[in-house]
Picture 1 (tube, rainbow, N blue to C red):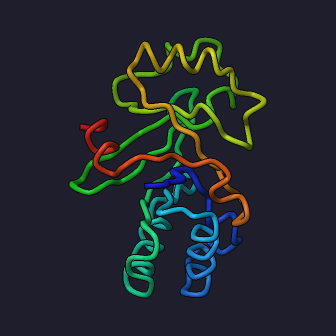
Picture 2 (tube, rainbow, N blue to C red):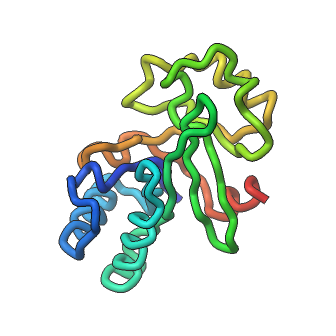
Amino acid sequence: MKLDLHTHCGEATCVYTPTLDVVKRIVAAARAKGLDGIGITEHYNKAYGFKVKEIVDQHFPGQLLIIPGQEVDKRKLHVVELYLPGDTTFRFVGHPGYPRVEDLTSEIDDTIHGIELRNPTHDDEMDQAAIRKAARKHNLLLLQNSDAHFLSDIGKYYNEISIEELCARAS
């Protein structure tokens, strides 16, 4: 599946309570990029992604997989949490390097399952060698996501991965 696991659709639409019209625009933007699904990861707001999922399931069944989530601060890292089937939570470091962290590997613990290697909003701040080193040390899945703050940015980067693999990594 083609999945962009880090998007901010509330910010992208400037509508923080999703409506049918807003969700229709989100689905259209993701489908236009050939995506099978997106993670909706508002800052400290997991309710938004669950509401979008509810609307998609009711009005656009089978058109786009919605993975509810949120982006939170964990010590010096921005961590994205994705709420997967079976009460499974997959966590990854979003845009490592923003904010700046001296020793990335020391900030990561065993609750983290992945790390972004590419993110168009923050690529210039991300040290790919340090990210790869942290991924090897902690056995993290390398990801590339859009971190979209505009609907047109959804799918700029995406992953080809299954939900099953994300669940297995988080278990």
